Length: 331
Image 1 (cartoon, rainbow, N blue to C red):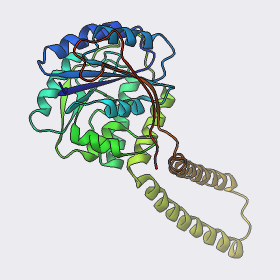
Image 2: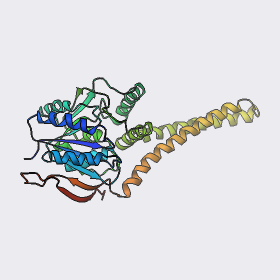
Image 3: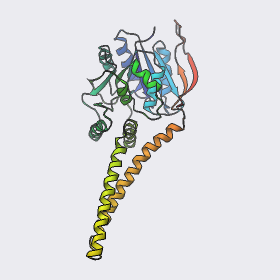
Image 4: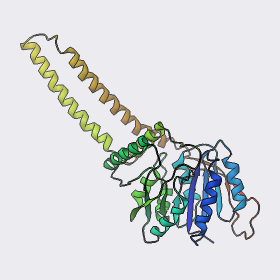
């Protein structure tokens, strides 16, 4: 039976928390009384996550599918690979760390059945460190002003997508993208609900400060040209201001004489301008880098193996493997 609900879960070095995830996820979905499937995408884990996922496939091959990457391509690439493999009409993304309770999936599915094609989630009370919470809120406000994408809680991966939105995302070939923002652009009737948030069941966050900064750079440069336009206007203003300063200094030299005082002030102003210019060059480099990655037309990810039950098979075999290599190209 074709599933109505597909739950896509990226997995990266989550061996400590996977047994607890299984113990809560499957009962929560069984209670919904609807056909479902769970698509785990192993994003190049270096621990025993693959063995644990394979064993879970043997236990529940009727509703479990496991996509194995040949390396680490990132959380959002793993989600897109899960979307390509999933068959449900309602797609739900969930992190493997159990910070989002699997019991909340039913609330997202119920909201989707009301006619929405994209349901985001807002954490009721975040169980993260204070600096990360405040930094995330500040970036949310800045990102919304720049991209005009209204996602209240961009860091929460518990979301539901309609098949129409997922099909459109599957047609995109962007090297770097942010799945919730991309879905928001394609959704006709999006909404958000409040969900619970828990501490990590085990392990530690895979996002470092650098990763979070890179993620927000990708988000801003991937969905808006406002930063480039802002620096273009800033460059014109600085050029105009610099021309006025040159005229004033030249006039003073001709009619008043050489001035020794204020040299360090001029140095400070010059260094400030150079700092702004260098930041603008770096921002331009972000856009050029995205173009460079896109024109190389390399695969976004490579699927090494898919563990899934053969179609039409009534009595599941111990393990059924569909081995293939899938390369998503940009041409």
